[in-house]
Image (tube, rainbow, N blue to C red; front, side):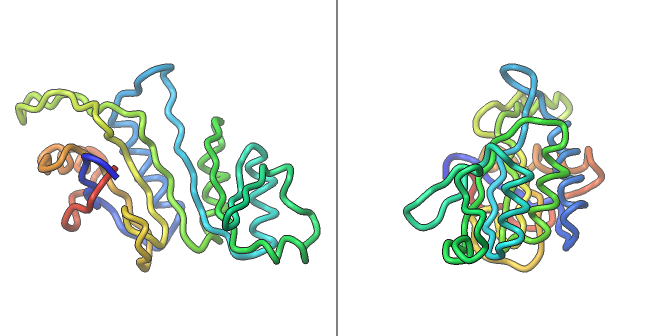
Length: 188
């Protein structure tokens, strides 16, 4: 956790709509570096079939179980052995045009999960007298957890901005037809 605040801007129970709103918010930012920004995916899986499906969808992912970790290729094929490892946490940092559709498939069956886009710069907003913002900004889509990974019911999209920068958060939310829907939470 760091020096941002996470403003909630959209809540729903539909995974695809959360991913859609989060993706739209990402488009409001400017990408640093190589010109691409892909989300990091984290999800807790407690079902053998879901874990095996996730392994197939994310062949470069890591799966964590207590003190052990496995690459996708090392995850056991045997359902009985795999069941003994559950729950596992999937962590994927993959690039690809279809990462979001693959993530939606996993997140629909996950106990909890998140997509986090952290490589963004929020552009200047001259009408609000705000310059660009570079420090730890981004978008976070949380599934059955809040911005700080506490369990909640439903899914939420957060925009991360510098502490106290509610005007920027509200402006960004309005760019995608949303608004701030609750108090900020501690961010990255």
